[in-house]
Length: 138
Image 1 (tube, one colour):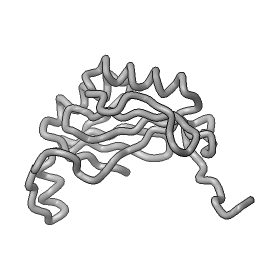
Image 2 (cartoon, helix red, strand yellow):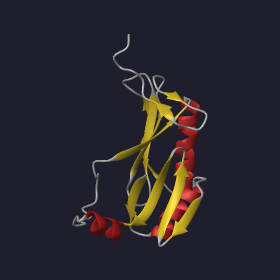
Image 3 (cartoon, one colour):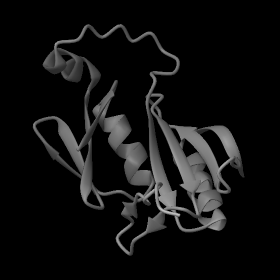
Image 4 (tube, helix red, strand yellow):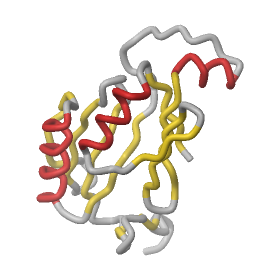
């Protein structure tokens, strides 16, 4: 599971539901099934307290990016357009990458960075899961 600390759980849930995700709420926490994992929304101050970390909420880049790999360049453009329509800020329009792929970034209303990428070296399964290739193989 990946838990995102958010300023307003209802606002965050509405954003992700505009992307087509379907959440379930339990005890002021929203859970989204995302392939073989879950993305969880929880109040930022509660997450910080649970982790025993002072929430400095300094803004800016927090040193973490989530990635959503897709099967084609066309899908990258489509997901970025869908995110923008849902209220995301496009921080890096889609472009060719150094690894021969195609990717762009958006941030959600709480500033969490999401990369949307097509990487021809990573197979995407029917359920959206990826397989990390054996980088040592010739």
